[in-house]
Length: 131
Image 1 (spheres, rainbow, N blue to C red):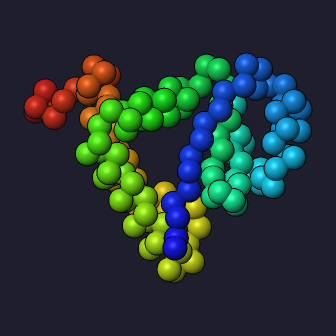
Image 2: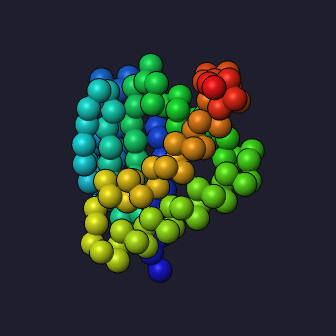
């Protein structure tokens, strides 16, 4: 069975002191895939996991936490996101795509859920307010 990756954000207190957490992570079979703007991304095969490391003032960490908390509280969106992740993983695996194509496949649903989150928190106008 094709499994969608688990995404796990972590937030070390001093992300610029990479040696400490990277040495610990390298004890596991992780691949350091990318880094940019105080964000590091690691991949772990078993279980299939994407591990994101953010700096303490990263807006991306806030977005990840808002998304996580929303899915915990909204079963309909949790089920929707679970389904689209599985569908995207299966479709991408079937044609040999890489992570970016998998992300592209689930992006419309991700943006739809994020819009609901931002509206609920007063961070974005609702569709009726935009008219």
